[in-house]
Length: 159
Ligand code: HEM
Image (tube, rainbow, N blue to C red; front, side, top):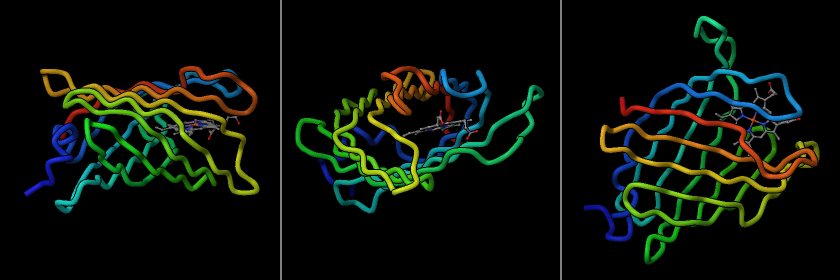
C-alpha cells in the first residue's frame, strides 16, 4: 500500500521510454536522443528515480550512451517534492518543487560539483502527463557561464 504522500506522483510509476531533442549554445546540436526513465517505490513516501539516455544518429540508430542519473524524490505534504539527483559527470543536485498528479516541476535548490565536473549553476525539470498516456519531459540548464535555457525535451511512453 503506497504511503498517502505518494498520491501526487503515482501516475509516474513504472518504466518509460521515448525520443527527445537537445541543444545548448556551447555544444554541437541540436541532437536527437532516446531516453529511458524509471520511477518506483517501496511503500514509503519517496520515489526511486533513474534515467538514462543514448545519442541517436540521423536514422535514429543509437550512437553512444549519453547522460545518466539516479536519485530519490522525497514527497512532502501538499505535493511538495525534494529531489536528490546524482550524475556520473560529478554533478549532485538537490531540486525542490511540486507534483499535482499530472505535472511535476523541479528547480535547483543546491548543486554540488566534484572537483573536475563542469560548472552547473541551476536546472529546471518539468514532467507533464497527458490524457493519452504520454509523459512530456523538459529540462532547462544554467551551466558553463550561460543563463537558464532549454537543454532537452522528450516524449515518453510507458513500457
Ligand atoms: C537525457 C539527458 C541528457 C542528454 C541526452 C544530454 C546530452 C548532452 C550532450 C550530447 C552534450 C554535449 C557533450 C557530450 O556529447 O557529452 C551535453 C553537454 C552538457 N550537459 Fe547534457 N544531456 C542530458 C542531461 C543533462 C543534465 C540533467 C544536465 C545537468 C544537470 C546536463 C548538463 C550538461 C552540461 C553541463 C554539459 C556541458 C556543456 C559544455 O561543456 O559546454 N545534461 N549534454
